[in-house]
Amino acid sequence: MRIAMISEHASPLGMGDQHAHVADLSKALAEVGHEVRVYTRRTSPGQAEVVPVADGVRVIHLLAGPARSLPDEELLPHMAEFARLLGEHWQGWTPDVVHAHFWTSGLAAVTAAKQINVPVVQSFHEIGALGPAVSGPSRTGYERALGRAVDRVVAQSQDEALGLVRIGVPRAQLTVVPAGVDSERFTPEGPVAPRDLDRPRILSVGRLVEHKGYGDVIEAMRYVPGAEVVVVGGPPADQLRADPGAKSLRALAEKFQVADRFRLIGSVPHRDMPSWYRSADLLVAAPWQEQFERSTLEAMACGVPVIGTAVGGLTETVVDGLTGDLVPARDPRALGSAVRRLINDKVRRFTYATAALDRARQAYSWKRVAAQVGSVYSVVTGLRRPAEAEPEAVA
Image 1 (cartoon, rainbow, N blue to C red):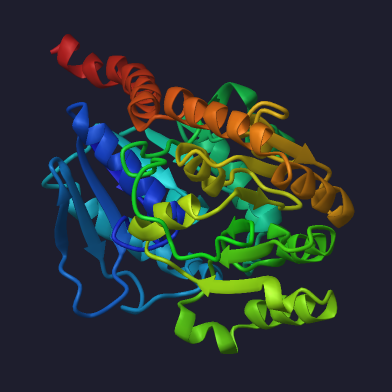
Image 2 (cartoon, helix red, strand yellow):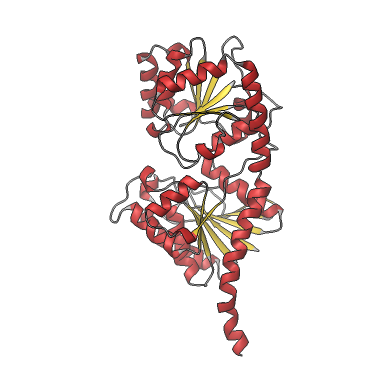
């Protein structure tokens, strides 16, 4: 099957959770025999138009808008041009199914796919409540219309699916397929990032945005004497000093008198992340609201127990009392108490780590995810075939 992945702002060649998700899903689909082309927006003048990234996977750069990185809120005006360029590319290579990632990609995908009567599958990854504002009609309005226009929406968790139903996406349009984790790259064995062995290490990973709950993690460290908290994410290390999110976190660490036990690393290449997970005694994921936390799966695959807030996809990824602990969101005291208990109980940490590793390998392998997503493709292409075959049958 020929699959067109549309990810206009998250290239598989870039860094970040969504970049890695599109890359890993594309490779997993190619490994089971599909031909995958990932269409993304050109973000620098020197980028090659076509870049092979693995057997059966190519990245296609389209020049829609300026050849530089743009904030998410500035992408929408360029989607008509992106759709036009997709249509031109598909005159010589027609996909069997189009899979769009994020809402702006979906708008371009639906517009282009309509011209060639090809089914569209949509993954939102996050919905409007957590996204940037857009001019004109609300982002939620676009997402509602898009969820109704595509052939199927793939949600990464039951919580995301419920959120989509609440904004008006028909439940019959939804299929839940969790994200996967590369259990060959993320393993308990391998290099370990440097650390002070005399101090327990608490790790948090992700973008430096308020709803990720890093402020709560820093405040919680007041209740975990002697431990250090390390945050991996945000801009590159050489840009951290000027970053507003980093400044805010450093100020909180000073306020709660834990600055000497707080480290902000900045962004790390995805290939280097396993060493950071292996260096931690446990991972803390404390968002206030979230659809999915990729870092929890990667930590589990490295044999690291997780303490998370009981919100969104975390309630499905983390089995409370088996692979980790769940605590109420925005409650630093409860979070700190849970971290302290687990840090002080080596037997429990070992038990959680063993169960977490097994769950990551069994329930979240990319092979399993590719099979589930492939089944969605088969369903939507099967629904289109009778209409396409009708004129030929009459002839």
